[in-house]
Amino acid sequence: MSPAHRDQTVAHGLRWDRAADLEKDPAEVPDPERVEVPQALREEIEAHMANYPDSRSAALPALEAAQRLHGWCSPEAIEQVACVMRVTPAYLESVASFYDMLETAPVGRHSVYVCTNISCSLRGADELYETVRDAATEGIDGEPINVRSFECLGACDIAPMASVDGVYVGPLTPEDVPQLLEDLRAGRPVLPEKQLVRRLVADPHANTREFPRHPADETARADEGGD
Ligand code: FES
Image (tube, rainbow, N blue to C red):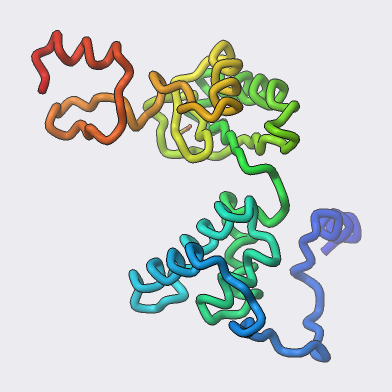
């Protein structure tokens, strides 16, 4: 590794080339007597563990649950998950640091991931991303909004799109951004008429009733004689 590359690697906190510290105590599974785990979090993690033949496979949903509670995969969150799963915090840190949607630093509780991969990019995602980033600088209730550009989020048919706290919305234009942020700040469903989950599909029997639709969709449906 060149010295310049090493400096850059260290600057990003990536110390994968650091020699193992053989003097260090071995990693330990946290002691349940010492670590307090919120009951609801414990139950959710245990339910995930029960879904897999090898309970360590529940690391991702367990970390996601802890992130939802703590806002990020903080050392405390990781320790709580490790305590319930009976694994070392280091095992979970290696998982959390690999996956983009698990945050290993505080970022704020609300996230807007703007897809800037090819389909979205061809339809104006780069401008959309910059508009969201600039408009979101105020944050919410003193916390930043976690605005990131993302690789393909798997909803290219509604390009350009974004995931707002996990809710897919699109196709978006820069003009949608003020309303998107206003909805997010007010705690309302974000751009309901643009949510993927509320869109009708061709098979009327496949359309879920779980989410209320935009009135325009209901009118169109009635006109087509749908159920
Ligand atoms: S390229 Fe944006 S969702 Fe696929």
